[in-house]
Amino acid sequence: MILLSTLSYSKQLKQELVQTLLAFATVPELRALQPPSHATFRLSEGYMPVRERLVRVTEGHARQWYECPERDLPSLPDEDWYLTGERRKDQHQIAKEEQIRVFVEDLMSQWPETNISAPPDDTHDRYISVELAVRDARTCFQSWHRNAQFKEYIEQIQDILNTLPNDYEILEQHYSSVPLDRYVSRRAYVDFNDLIRNLPPHFSPADTADFDTWLFWDKEGDKDHSKLRELLACVSSRSSSGHEQRYARDLLKSFEALCEDTSVKLKPPEEFARQLRRHLEQAQRHVHDVYKIFCSHLQTGNWNAIMRAQMLPRLFKTSILSHLASDKIEALPPLWKMALVQYGLAITTLQRAERLVMSAGNMAELSSELQNVGHRNWDPMDFPEWLLLEIENNILIRPDQAQISRAMMAPSLGSNSVMQLNMGLGKSSVIVPIVAAALADKTQLVRIVVLKPLAMQMFQLLRKKLGGLLNRRIFYMPISRSLNLDIPQALQIRDILKECMRTGGIILLQPEHILSFELMGFEQLLSGNSELGNILVRIQDWLRGHSRDILDESDEIMSVRFELIYTMGMQRAIEFSPDRWTSARTARERGK
Figure 1 (cartoon, helix red, strand yellow):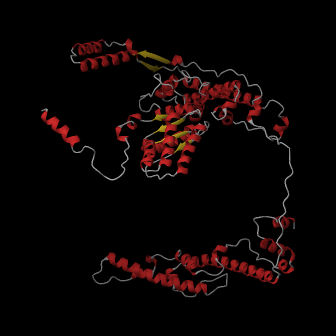
Figure 2 (cartoon, rainbow, N blue to C red):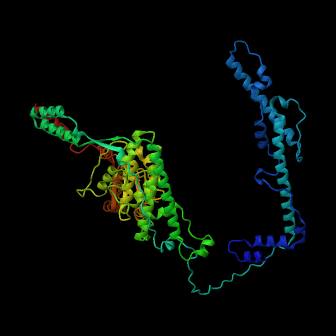
Figure 3 (cartoon, rainbow, N blue to C red):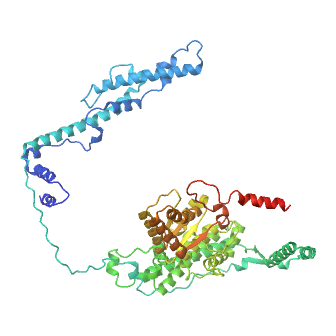
């Protein structure tokens, strides 16, 4: 009754429904009715046999034509085997449909029985698997019978309700003002920021094994290149034109670079695999010890009761390291940041030790792994998200990758820069993600521009590299001329762009998307839609002042083939035609 009283004052509930529920509780005739004793009712199947349903069930158990009498039909005169087979199939289809119709009629005649039996006609079995069809049809009959009983039960309820008086009094709505409450609720949980009020732990860095003695550096300048030097001197002496002299100077620069080049040879000691495994065990123990020290320092304090209630934040390795991401690192004290970076470096040392053990059987991979110690020309304290990317992807950023990335982030000339790197050295998989993560500092909008065939691959790569521990959102905004924008949609695009910059997200675009959006504003202005055109032009101006573009495969993207031209208005001849090309042709012919 308390529930019905509460429902009576609800704005959404109909009073007729409350009266009906009240009748079930107070009218003796309704309380005496017992519903059908079945667990489930499939009311959508109906409450009487449905012919179409039985036909579908029977067709599911129909025999193939080669199992029926039509298989033995003789061939007609001058009839080949293909036409004979088609005629047999057609005759079988006609006979099968007739048998199914009669079979279904025989089944429906047994209603309202639930335990139906097979029809007495033996001809059905020639075209239908009667036993299986009757079994499935019996299930349908049982469901229809249960629904029919439920329908009868509802009709009995309605008959009793019709005998009751149908007048009811509309209840007046009563509202009272909520009393003023000056109570200020306090946070009822403990988060990670509460735990880092303790002093950070101090631990020694991981022991790095000395593998430098395994590598030997062979300088090309120590070799005898006298014949090559004589050849270059001969080429330079015979150069006459300016082009040949420039070519000779370039060859000499290439020769000097060759002399400065060094090659690395690997000479591991005996039982080096055992040393690698020992180094791996030390790295595993160090990471385990550092994690235990972290947990003990974070849980130190007046957290005994909360710890027993299991209400402290869960301290997983990933949850601890995630505080080095850009969205959480601002709340991290400098000493705790240093401690987390040291923990991350211990994990990268462990990952490198695992890779060394796995590459023990491949000298080329082992040599490449030994050459890259990691973190030589960049500081993880300055780029903690690079450290997270290394941990999550089980890699170490190579010195050349870090050097190129920093040159892209801060070009020496202070203007646009183009970098070149050989294939397979991590341009798209390493350099682009770490540069984008460093530049997306919530003060500028980072746009990664890729070719259309590479767009989906780059999207998946960025989501994998930057969507985990780094927690960066990847935006994708395809825009073409076929897109009919209105003013609310244009403002929504502006808001999305600003949200991307504010949250440190990265937007992935194609060259035609940028050009289409730039030309769309001018098209709207020339078409007379000045309000929408001005909004689009202002958004484009905002992009010029706040965006930073990273072009993957810049040689293709900057090609003139990607120039986008909009055709507008009625077709007409080019200005000054045909004089603009006939005059040039005439001048060329007279100059011969």
